[in-house]
Length: 210
Image (cartoon, rainbow, N blue to C red; front, top):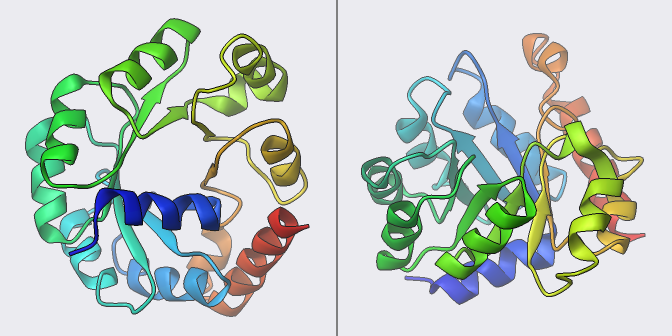
């Protein structure tokens, strides 16, 4: 079994956590494979996706994929997802019980926060990465303002990250990026155009490398 530190290292090296939030679970497995072909390793399935735990179990079988669970707001859900194969836990809000549950199972937690107080509190409670959410509503200027007095905080902006701005977030101190709609293009999914999704994933991974 991989340690929390080893999993975290993989997430931080890859720099991208792809967020799958769909109304239908049917395309999840093919979507995860398409993202992985494009160089994405960490793939989060949110609990709002139907049969999320079953889908996490399935994608945990794809060699090289690091499956995670998202939208977790209680310890019981975190535990069930980890037992299904989730290697990391992502939350929209920070709760001590969820952080403790992830760590009890030797998994990293990416814990959601918005205000400077919430961000610092999540970090002090033991969050491995603090997920700045919703980052899109406040943008890069807000992120830079938070980081200025607290540059040591490990923050992952989530929301509003695009191929065009990904590198700029990283240049300004983001540790990694939570990416949803840019990668999870619902029109392409509806058309079952997974080749194009792979191409978008490749473009995103290239953008952060450059």
